[in-house]
Length: 597
Image (cartoon, rainbow, N blue to C red; front, top):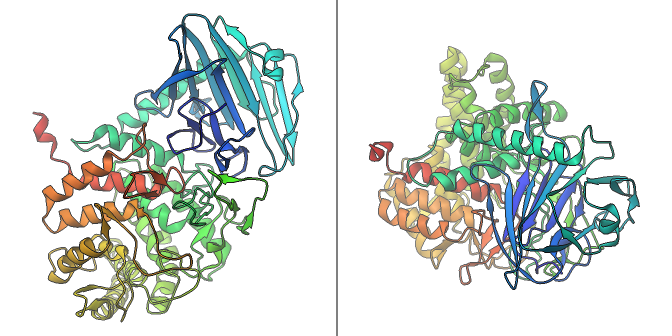
């Protein structure tokens, strides 16, 4: 029996496919053939005791487990020890990512290698994929050294050097030598499974080590930042440039809340946070690929409004529906597929895209810097931002039942105009610089005047409003207000008093479409830490940051939300918002490298 579902999960992936491995080395979530596809392993979202939708390699009897990443890679190693201590084995899991034939090879493939370490390891392998979002459990079709499952247009093949009869019958057998299990598309492997597994493991380890070696790291918290950066990279689909907000769907934001959403899509806002964080550590290729993605989004819309979220392939639909065959994470239904947020109006998207492209114009390391053609493309977004800046939208929190002129959305529209003005100066486009600077200055004056509420002594969440909202903590980071501005200092202090609960920040206090939020939104706490440091309360910020780091799961990952009372992780996993927040705050708070000398 697999362990009860929780978010003590490790992620493997290659920027095309991804899987979640629980602490017993069972794959409980993996979409096929791409990380936004049909979850062939879906046990994570199918109740407390799922009987299928997983890939387990386990002792025939009870066992204990120790799990961690191979240093500076996306390779997971789990050591399982029989409960009586008589035997132990190691299971290594990864998705191949390596240089092959002069290009990056990132196939739809998961490799699992199991090796005996001590004693007599009597093991059982259970492979039970589902199809049609849990609606079908296809029977295996046996070959000489493989099994194949096919249903609902999905075909998965497992090639192995283990006895196929044992695998098909889920019979226990003694592990006398290392074995390799390769889950892949329905094609014949070019070599024996063991040879493919060894070669891909060495190549994948080498690729990640080289990638990490190139990162610009803070002096402090290097391991934490490396793990966050690798995780963000695993959420970026290199083929199209889209970046998913998380790898899962419908992990509820809190117990019984029904705030269950599908995050396997590219929110332009969330993607900016990922790009920004990776840029901070020097991993700029994700930004370059994302600009290609945005170019396709703009072309798709043909000059019309930009939606807040798109599929990994932008033209694919996001129709929201419920997968009735899945019982939900820990039994919390519904399991939603698709996301109706694609139909919302969220004005911050224009500033998000321009901010994501901002570094393209300034970074001399890039082989192809931003130019007049990219600037002209971004100007189209700037014109939309200017036109809608002071009109209502659903806001950053995607309210489904109301619209306001949200302060964050308006500020992001100002960002669009402000950054275009700066880019125009850089490119020597004097007339355009004057045009965009005038637009930005006009918006800034209006936004700050109408967002400031003297009665509450803080910037409100909407213009002329009185509600408080954690997103205004970003105003200093966006540059629309200086951190030393007394109004911003007062806002940080007010939000810290009102939104904080046991050191964690909630998004807001007012009831939304599902009532009053019960848990803290992890990125909001990171924003608060960053704001504390910006206004000079650095030691307080460092202490709170340390507390947040201790709430990561056993391999250093965050989901979307944290229960302030229990410290339990809730929400989709791993959440790019949260991992990006870790990087940005670590870069701000870290002491300098001169400490190493």
